[in-house]
Image 1 (cartoon, one colour):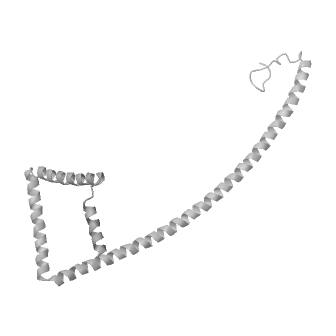
Image 2 (image 1 turned 60 degrees about the vertical axis):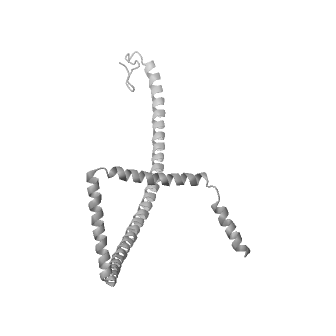
Image 3 (image 1 turned 135 degrees about the horizontal axis):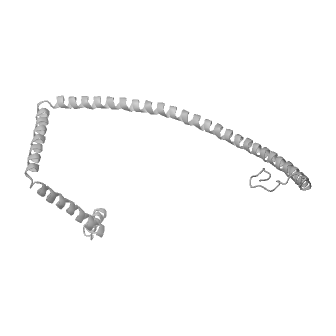
Length: 187
């Protein structure tokens, strides 16, 4: 007997609670939405064409609903069987579509994964080949640099001997003046 009294006490406490600000706002929001819908509907009904469209669509909806109700009243089991057949048919079509989609997914997924793996392997090979080519190119570059140093080292020695010779033979070659063109002697 004590428990029902406590339950009643809790119900009265819940009913007497003051609504929170959030509850007040949500109540105002709902009232505003309903009022806006009513006002909008009333304004829309001011137009003659809108009233005709609403009247005709409501009439056709009423007729189709009444037709369905009369069919159900005449033959309820027939309507139920008809709907069951439609649902079964739609269900089988949907199952086929799901199976087709799943097989397509598996096929595409398999093909795509194989191609992605192939591209990954080929790109790894390309990267390795590129690294090897870069190393080989560095080696070639160092050999060219070395050859250039040897050539420039020999030409420096040769030009120093020729300058000493030409300075001695200055009477023979009077045009042995410095030139603005590299590698050309005299002007």
